[in-house]
Length: 81
Image 1 (cartoon, rainbow, N blue to C red):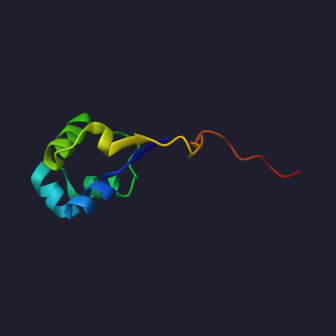
Image 2: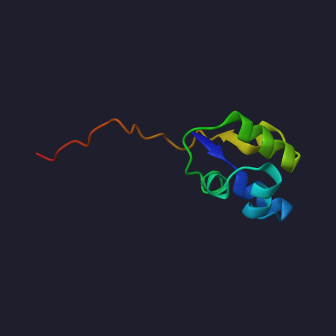
């Protein structure tokens, strides 16, 4: 599973979501989705703007967490019979 480490990066830099949104031109609701790891699609322009604003690399923002198993959203739950 890919994890978005934006909350950690903003905390380390003592930057608010609003400040990042202002600096990058990304909508505050989109920054919030990234911050709370709610987004499922990554806009490469947003990723580039975030990296530039925070002075970091892509690998600082996105990391692969192999300890978390991804749930298949298309799977239907089994009935208990």
